[in-house]
View 1 (cartoon, rainbow, N blue to C red):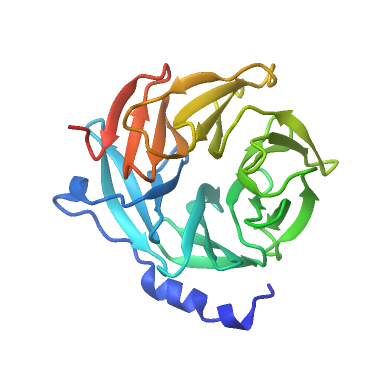
View 2 (cartoon, helix red, strand yellow):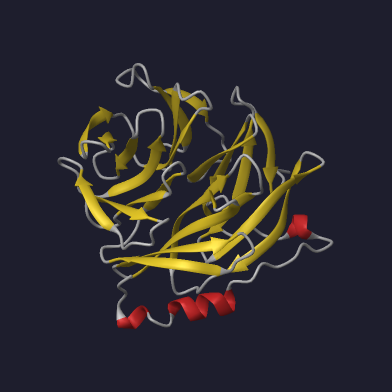
Length: 294
């Protein structure tokens, strides 16, 4: 893996600083900071990425969300996104962050031990993982490029496609059913579908102001989109993507919805400006929040 000399010491710093903190008696009161991204595997904790360089583990104890551990990476880096995955039988985390124009994607154990890292010269905006092929996809933070990283082989990031007419790409999600990616243009508000076999991107749907996260329903029939401008979460029909989106959740407490993750049949929505994690039922009713709403 080729890395810039200026970034040579980063893994050492990360290994030294990223150690999971064990849960304490008052773990439920530990602050989330500004949660910019969240993700969860079917088994394991819900992981929350804090804008100030921390990853928090959230477990549901007695049905209530509780922060049960945290680890830190260098605060000089600006947090962008995270994705949880299972690699060689172990749950792991891909954490994306930026320092100036340089993007860094780091592979951690869930206890905060750094295993690998990759640099992207034009920054990183979002990441998505293909578990069947151990491939990580990333959008550039400053160009309309999508990168491919073969995690199993340990190769360097390779640009695979540019979305037509795009200026700056945001959230990305992997579509296993169609071997495709969905990715949003932060400037145009358009979502593109990327055929990975043909490495071709086409317009999929519009009507989004500024998406912060994309997530499929369990059966793949709906695309959930959090929008930090309209302050809501909407759904698009995968069968009729050109149809108007339907509002799934819109709260007075929303400030800037930033991430989406399924917790069983509930949808967790992070909000970085509200400093909260909201939990919704499958039907869109608010079930809980961390910290609790008063």
